[in-house]
Length: 165
Image (cartoon, rainbow, N blue to C red; front, side):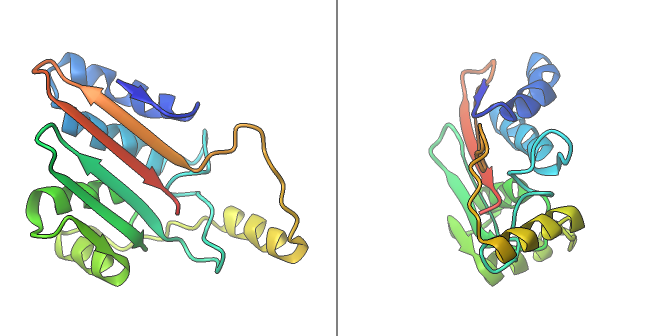
């Protein structure tokens, strides 16, 4: 398995025990990326605690593909903390491959995902300060997307990505 950027270690470390216990690559990708999406201590680029779009709204994107080249993706998803899991539900249960915006959000609710606030107040305040100053600050190692690839014991490959959009 491999993941992008330093915060990708969160995903790798989360799923090592699962893979050793014969978890599927698809499960590993979902659970690993979930760990990044829900992390608010070691990164602030993906998922909960990530930065909002230019209008101040959280719109999350995620995609996943399995060894059979099936894929599912969501874009512009709001109010859901685990977009990679919604993308997997699209892969497994939707007649479509990609759902966007309100359609993705309604699909998530239909699949049992709960509405959640994914914009932290501290991040909102930082975004508002940026909007006032309009000063672009390049942070070293500043990235906003996690990518994760995994090969399981059965030789099946899965990949996924998630971003705050």
